[in-house]
Image 1: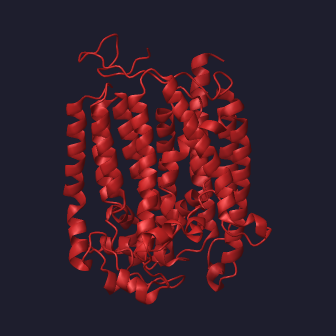
Image 2: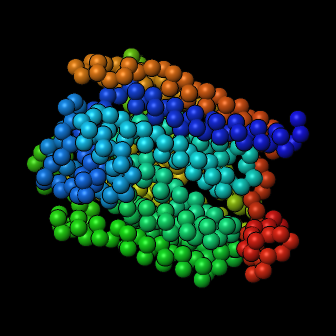
Image 3: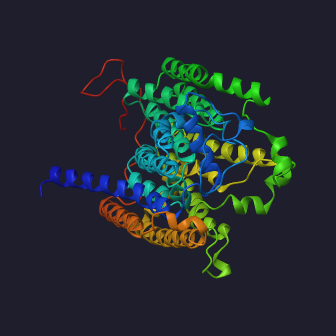
Length: 489
């Protein structure tokens, strides 16, 4: 087969693998978990319904949605979220609820989250390819890391804002990396500004992350790279103006209604839940807190497993922390070996600072009486996936194969555990019977992705080609290259 034909076939198969991984796990969880089985899901669907009716929800006024099954929250505790996600869901949720199909509205909203999960994996692939230039299979290996996260599956098959939040923040980071590498400047300027605005319209906690990316962009612009200072400053300022123009009004509304920009209600939480305010230092060193937050690569609690295999922390240390530490060290080694180190070091430091910021915000949130849900750490996984994937590509991808088999096995146990729990609920018989064919899509996508990665890694291995040297080129394109393109020296 000619080389061009092989390339085209490989690209098609890669798309198939990404779509299967993006749809399979979330769809399986969608089928396994009854709708409105959590109060948050009902509140999110209600928010979309109120937006469809031309309103914004108010915490004290409760829900307009009258869901006959599942959990019905006593207050509208998602009213503090900006409305972007709900504007997307409203055209599906509103007509179905108005027609009397409340459960169907929730399922339709879940289907949107499945599609956003696929979009997230495509963004992760692009980010992995950009952050690890020259490492064959880095993009697809990053997709495998994210696609097999237990919280990718849970959130992708439920109505939460975590998947959209991960998508827009990863898009912002991707645009930052592309600008730092000097390609497609106009398009990436627009993407960065739009993604930062979307961050502000999706989650209050994404505002510091967007600000960090804007700061990193300015720093990169003052280094000896392809991004010029005036472009960096204009883009960063444009992103700030876009955030204020699109979501500033909402946070002022939060302050008017609740007395704080985030829209939180700590007094209500203290009076109606078991959560109480604690010193930040106490939360930061609390093993129970970190154990709860470390479920990104575990399966939580599975009723048929030996007790020694149930805790989340050992699985996370083995499948996430250990390979991640090795991956960061390998990334630093690659950067040190390169001739131009400044821009890659800034990008690596930005990724680590963003993840540290997410952790610090959650510690502060819990210390103030907020909840401690592992899903709040999911936003880190797309950022860290390329570095976690780097050591797994060693020895022609053999560690990635072993890692993927372990993860997909735990994922199957997680889905079975979910079905065992939900089938004990009285209303479970009105929902579609969970089937394993959706899980089979994930297995098929994993097998195809692993085959493609192993096949591509036969050449250069995990080391790949050395990272390109950042060189400022002339203003006018030469030799067919765009202005500011990267060259290898």
